[in-house]
Length: 205
Image 1 (cartoon, rainbow, N blue to C red):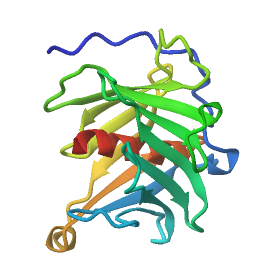
Image 2 (tube, rainbow, N blue to C red; image 1 turned 180 degrees about the vertical axis):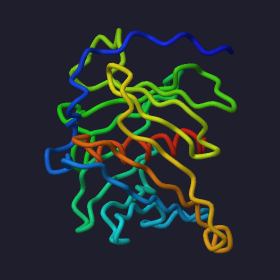
Image 3 (cartoon, rainbow, N blue to C red; image 1 turned 120 degrees about the vertical axis):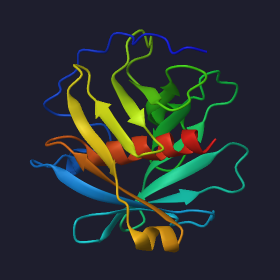
């Protein structure tokens, strides 16, 4: 199935992107390292480190959930976002809720594929909770997930974050997938990480 053409994007302010909280919007670009331990389902298998190699985020899994569900926590273990796959969704939609839980009133955003089938290239659309009609998308991501070479764009197609592969001998030997992401000034880096967690889940499938 061929990918459809891009829908028009919402007219939001590209100078500041705040979705999860103002404390995650820095007045300078942020470089993060994402380390995923492959072949394991244990909590902490997906970690996000800052430039000083401190763990700033990690992902907890909910093994006994009827649906695929994950929770993004900060470095102190405080739940920030819960991710849940929506049932019976043609475009593999995931939803993100504030905190730990899936109260519809706490919905932050949802993510879906641009087309049902995607092969070498990745293209996802993001809709904020306030965008109920979804005639336009608020953010999108394009690139190659296999190469960890993806770019996240804001509403006016301005680049707000970029992923890049970190090829290290140690990561290959110990079974780790290691890549980095650079988040632009005044962009909510917790939101970017949350988006990447969903991107990872969609591509795992």
